[in-house]
Amino acid sequence: MILLLCGLSGAGKSTLATHVKNKLRRVEIPVEIIDADEYRQKLFKDLGFTREDRNENIRRLGFIANKFSSQNIVTLVSAINPYDDIRQELIATYPNIKVVYVDCNINVLIKRDTKGLYKKALLPDGHPDKLSNLTGINDPFEIPETPDLYINTSLQAIEQCVDEVYRFVTKNCIKEKYAINHFANVAV
Image (cartoon, rainbow, N blue to C red):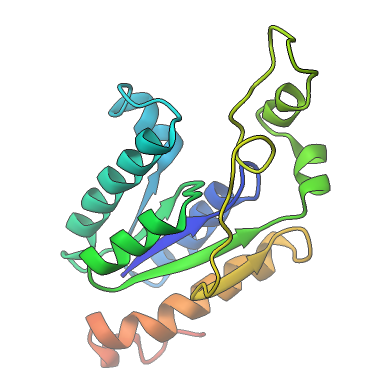
């Protein structure tokens, strides 16, 4: 199973993925995180933030995720992933992809601003430090119309969000990929 955790910067995708990974590992479910920021810094330095580059980044992440998933590893892809066409392309290309929309109110994101990106994006035009391609502010984000799972981190505590994703994985993945008897005692 591949979970595409998509949403705006600061919505909690990476935090959620880390906590879900820890919870799944405690019940011996193999899991891996593919964090778009980490892969961009280490492997995909050639990509910028044009629509074409963002799509290519997601294609590459999807390819890697499929390699893990094909080995029965639950794979959590944490990426803004702003365009529906590339999400649909991955769904059509690889088996068992689920879209998880990690939503958060824009005012909460601006208050969190963990990376200082919103502050830069909201600077006046012409300012030398202005960020002109922040998804959700001055670059589009296409909200998934029918995500497989909807999480709102501005309305729910992280523990609730983690529990929802955990239950989703154990309900939708375990029966398909793993021996049901092995997980008969897994609390969902």
